[in-house]
Image (cartoon, rainbow, N blue to C red; front, top):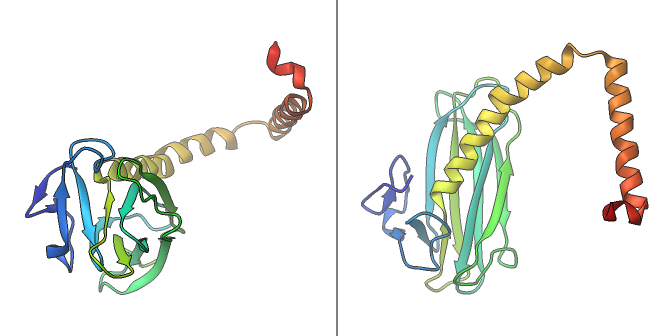
Length: 196
């Protein structure tokens, strides 16, 4: 995900392309070789195919430079006419956005189930700052990797595990759950347990 065309990551779009640039300076990249620098008022979005009824995860690393910087991340489900059916958003307030040159915060947004009629989801980032030339960055590579992992977990691993659990004896599951809960309680209340 570290390929850029005219400072925009490949497969991403923006209504403010002049306010977005790729950066590679030490301390401005969380991992990998590049990150996206977004100035005040900029946006960055990508449309992805979805499956109705599934949940989706957007996770990313970000930090800001300057004062009063905010970041909004959204997952918006759209129909075939680009009408919004459901929007999930994560608002990162200025006090929650790390403002250190070498530190990044980790943020995660889990969507609601993709509604009936949805054909795609628009993943978007918006930067708002209280005036001046402020910047925020996201690590596109790990954001994309966590998103892909979330899709794999929700669409493949979770149904597989549910299928196994459906075929197990209900009474046996209750006994296993009871033993697990009692073990946790024992560990919590017995201070000597951690020394064994």
